[in-house]
Amino acid sequence: MKKGMLIGLAVLMTGGCALRPEPLELSVEKREIMLGEELEIHVDEGKISSVDAFGMMEDSQIIEKDGKYFFEAFVPGTYSILASQDGATSEAILIDVCEKGKDPTERPKTVDVAWVLDDPESFVDRQVTLLASLPQMAAMDENGDFYPVALPVEREGGMLRLNGRPVEIGSCLAQLDGVLKHREEGDYEFWVEDYHMVLDGAARNIE
View 1 (cartoon, helix red, strand yellow):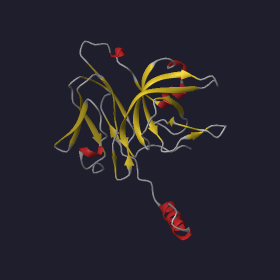
View 2: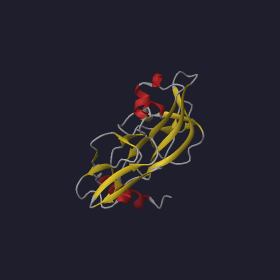
View 3: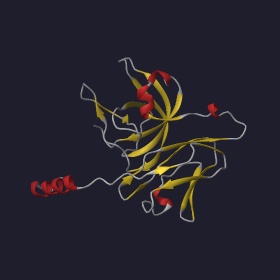
View 4: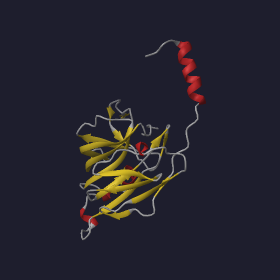
């Protein structure tokens, strides 16, 4: 709520002087592990103070041992590892977790929204899990109508229209389960069937 022109100007001036924190750097030695295998997550020294900096993930955990962080999954699938602390956020690292003796291609594939935007025809009518940045505000079409969108995590630029189940979260990174469909207008939209938050407060804004 606006508190007056003077206060509003002060907020604008101080906000313009704020420095964006440097992103957190995460790395792993490999992107595919076996079920039950622990994978060390390398972090910038001193940048992450506890395991609480990592986003919550279903069917998996990140634990701390002697100042080092390890990822482990309990169900085969593709998992996204992210961290956020003191306003700084890492890029997502996707890890494939395979069950011994199983074909990894049998699992639903998790992809960044950027991959779908770059090659949508490869994903049309396919069941897929998107790793997406959900902005707090909706986009507006040429008629002035608002609609929800998902933005890429791995890069800036581009957005994907959402339809289907209403996504009642925003300003976060999330996983969206659903199917990519053609629209009559000639572009594409993602029909959401289910979703869950991966990391709060880490979304990109609509440019």
